[in-house]
Length: 114
Length: 114
Image (tube, rainbow over all chains, first blue to last red; front, side, top):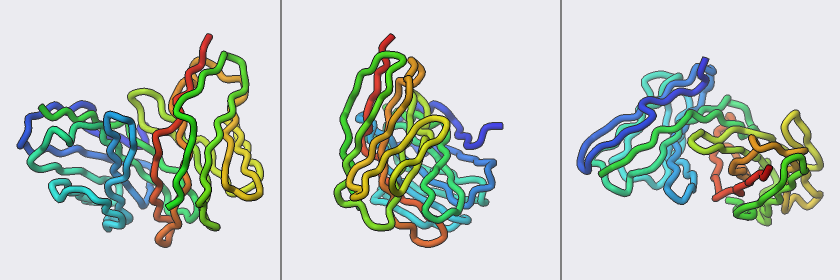
């Protein structure tokens, strides 16, 4: 019954590798997001998709590419991983309701690049 | 983008009421104020949202003065399980249809003491 799920929960990989994190929501929401939380606990938005269309693309290296195969999924692909990519990545979703900022977050994926 | 300022940390004893104040001097006319809670190793969880005056739900109350340049999250009779980071957010205007671009600050780390 998990509303927003992410896989994997932990990801340890070496520099230069390519990896993907998957996100699925079963809430029927139209909008999905990817956030990055660094070691200092700042939580910054990376991308936002609405109905499979990219809406927000913050200043993120183009090594990061979101892909939305359908409204319920938003996956994050990261190429040529760097040490600075180590962080916790959160997926979130929200209903298409104006003036409501309620987002539902997944449990996070802790990425460690060695 | 309305920036928010809140205390980095607070301590409280169990059973006490906790008030966390957030400053947002540059809040825009149409912006809403939203509070999230984040436990360690979990994604943020929506607590409450308001525009003006007072909003109350089963978890907390949100007090917003007339000038809306600040807001106060009030947690009644906290317990140990309320130990978490609390984020005050001011939502940017949607791009239409409820798109939400919220920016999380560093939050307030609340430690509830037995």
